[in-house]
Length: 282
Image (tube, rainbow, N blue to C red; front, top):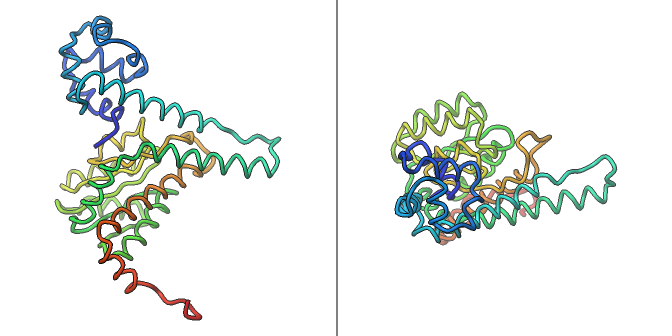
């Protein structure tokens, strides 16, 4: 239930001697196998076609051709994400140009994130929302704002959930999770130590973990049971989260809407019950 490149990262530490050369190559330069036959790759990595086929199946593919097509699709998306990430605003830009560039980048980020999301993974995450005793949300900085947005949505649908502003409280929450609980950990970079710690503690407690994070180079993705990927359209060292925040909020909206869709009648009744009347009756 993770992208192929993330599965490659996960499996690298478990690779056997016959697989290591190929795994290292895939990690460093996945594009290098896209236009080569299985016999060519076997020769270049000192292994056999049979070993490569077995490895492809371990990584969740039906065979070498399925592996190549899946890899080609992901590589293309990540190249697209990288191109978006390097779009810059210069001191010479007019306000009109800034409006255009920021809006364009947000739209492109949303579109690339859409391509990364797999319906079957969204469905599995919704099932976890339905079956979990409680849902605990984790995030820092801008990701905490996204977690709070999801928290308010889940409250409207009568899902028992929790979010804390303080990281120490988040850490204690993760340690107190039980087998039937669900942790949703949000981190664009997937490298934030506090969030990695919370994910590991949640897993150690027996809870399931959903990560909303960048689809590549994310340590958090490796810790999660399910990954809802965000397009890597911003550099890690950035002035402020913009397109990444929009994409995270969009993923939250997709997840919540899919939950409402599967529990439509109940949620509609709940929305009526939990609607807060505004002054003036509207």
